[in-house]
Amino acid sequence: MSFWRKEGSTSDLTRGQRRALEEFAELRISLEDLRRRLHGVLEFDFKDQERSLKTHYGGTPTPGVRIELEHIREAMEKHAREEVSTHDLADWATMLLLNDAYDWEGPDEEKIADWLNEISILTLRTNNEAGE
Image 1: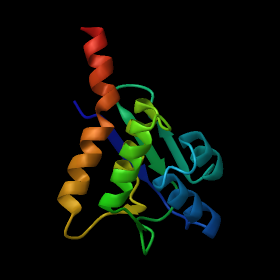
Image 2 (image 1 turned 30 degrees about the vertical axis):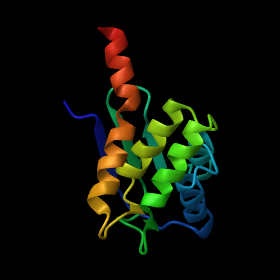
Image 3 (image 1 turned 60 degrees about the vertical axis):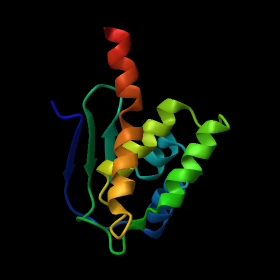
């Protein structure tokens, strides 16, 4: 069973939409703020076991919104300081994984992908354990 599903179509991102993606990557705006600011170009549902995302912009924006290990460290520090809930942290990681606008290609890409995958399934594990 797949936990993630993504679809895409066409149109370009505006500067404001790109800025919203950057701010979300830094956890400066919430998932709901991102939903509001990208209304019409990004649809997603992270509520159930299968998380889905559909974009209405053409492929991967160039350049992509860069994700580094530092983004993950900062997100985990915010979580440790209780500035971000486990649920919000998992949704953050899921958005970065599913949205092709985010790019972490390079020497740390495997580490980044592994961390994002682990963080993304945090709430799925909790929900599965609660159901057992």
